[in-house]
Length: 71
Image (tube, rainbow, N blue to C red; front, top):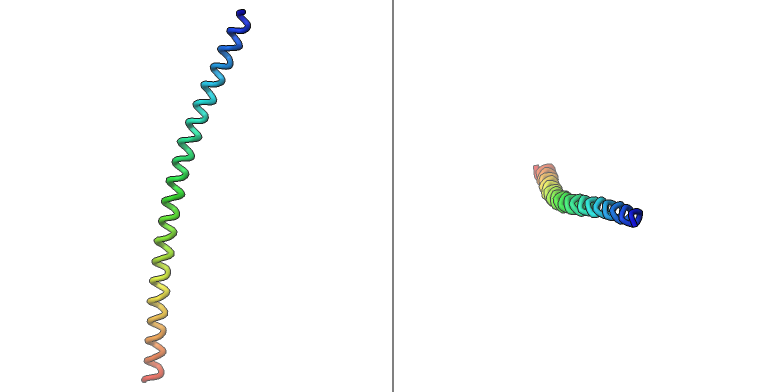
């Protein structure tokens, strides 16, 4: 009977460890998802800014070409 109780305590201890690991993984997963959301938002913002800059550069090039042909 003593062996059975020892084994039961060992299993209980192992289960507690697994529960702790599971909680750590859940916390890490939540943190990684938040980071991913932040990075995707930053990427979208950078793509938008890049598009704005490209449009401004194209407009400047167009004005320069117009000045060349008009001047």
